Image 1 (cartoon, rainbow, N blue to C red):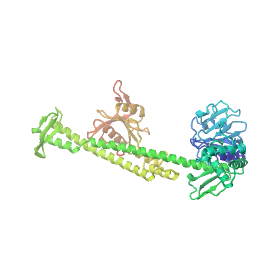
Image 2: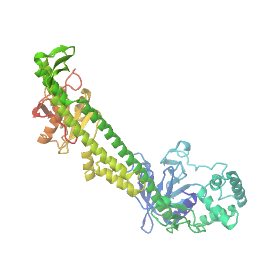
Image 3: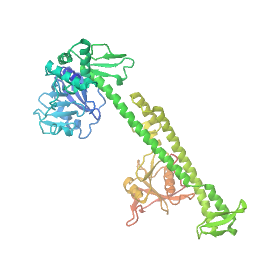
Image 4: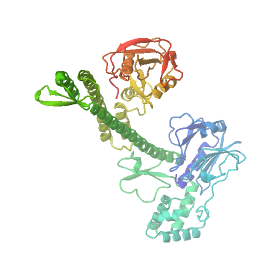
Length: 577
C-alpha cells in the first residue's frame, strides 16, 4: 500500500473510530483479518487488514463473509484479547508503513504493511509482544512473544523526507537522478527516500517539470499538505470501462493535469473508504485469476487422467486379441481331429475352409486337440465379452474426455471473475467436483461422473447411489475388509474360488441390502474372481462384522461366521471407467 495513502487512511481512521468499541476479530481469508467496531453513535464499522506479502494494506472495504478461524491462527488465539476494549487512537509514523490501533488500558494492534514481510502484531500495554500473525525469519526476536516490540529501522542509506530539509532533499534527488541516467529516475530516487514509492516521485517530477520548479520544493509542499489533510487519495480508472480494475491506479493525491486518454478519477470523500474500495477490487481480480488458474489445473489433470485411462482401456481391448481367430482354431481342431499331427508346441490340421492347405495351431502338450478346441471356444467367449466391455468403457471415457476438451477450448485461461465463474459452472455441469456443496445438484452430478478413487481399491457406484468397493490384491483385500469397511457394511466374495473382497456400503445400517444393489455388488465380486468366465457364479455375502482373519494364512484369507449366497452373472456397473 502506498505509504502516503496509508498516512491519510490512518489520519481519517483516528478521527472516525476513536472511542469505538471493539466487537472482535474476524477472519475473512488466508491473508485478511477484520477488526469489527461499534462507534459511539451506534454505527458498526469494519477495519480490514490484508497481509498478503506482495500487496499488504489496511482500509475500510465492504466486509466479506466471515470464515471459521483457523486453529492456532492469529484470530483464534488473540481475538478475545481485544473484544470489549475501546479504541484510544490510531498512530502512524510519517515515514514508516506501521499503523498502531491503541486500545485504552489494554494491548495495541500493530499492522506492519511493508511489502514482502507484512505482519499483525499484538503488543501488550507494557510494550511486550503478545503474539504475531507471522514470524518471518528476518524479524528475529523483534516480534517474538515475550520480547519488547521494536519498529523496523530504516537503512542508514535512506533519507527521511518528512524530516529532511529542502536542500538535503534537493541534493538527494539530484544525485539519484544523475545515477539513474536513461533509466527510470522515479524508481532510483524512491530507493533513497524512506516511505516514498515510484508513483509518488513520478507525480512530483511531473509537477515540478510542468511548473519549472525544484522537485524537492514540490515534494516538501505535497508532504505537508498530505499530513495536514489538504490532499486526499484518488483512484484513476478507465472511463470506457470503469469496472475493469486492471486499469485502476491509486494515487496519493490528484495530479494537477487532466487524466490521460480516456481515464477518469474518483474518490469517496474518505481516504479509508477510497483505499478500501480500490484494494478490495484489485484483490478480487487477483483472487479470480488465482481461482481461474487453479480450475484450469484441475481440468487439465482430469483430462490427462482420462487420456491415460483411455490408453489403458485400449491396451486391454488389444489384449483380448482376435476373438474370431480362437473360434476358427477350435472349429479346425474339431473338424480335423482324425488327421491332426503334433509339431512341437503346435498341432497341424487341415484347413476346414480349404482342404489344400493346413493350419498350425498352438497346443501345448499333453493337451489333446478336443481339449484344446474346448479351451479355444472358452477363450473366444471370454474375448467377445471382454472386447464388448472394453469398447463400452472406451466409449464412456472418450465421451467424457471429449466433453472436457470442449470445456477447456471454450474457456481458455480465464482471468476476470465473470469468465472464472463461467468456467466453474461448465466444469460442474461436466461433472468435475469443483466448488460443490454437499447435497447440491452440482455435487450429485459430480458424484455420478467422477466416482472416488482409493489406493489399492476399485470404486464403483451402484444405480441407487451406493458405493461398491473391490480390492485389487490380497493385501488390498485385507486392508479393505478390516480397515476401510465398517462393521455394518455388507461383504461379498465369489464362493469357492480366489477373488476380490467386495464391500457394499451400508450407511443406513440396514439389516439386508437392497436387492438391486446386492446383485450389482455380487456381479462385481464375480467379475473380479477366477470364475469370471462362467455364465453364472455363486457369491457369498454377509456383514463385515461376521468376517474374521484366518490365522497364519496369506493376506486376504478370511473365515465367515455366517453368510448367504446369491447367484449372478459376472459384470461391472455401467458407469464404471
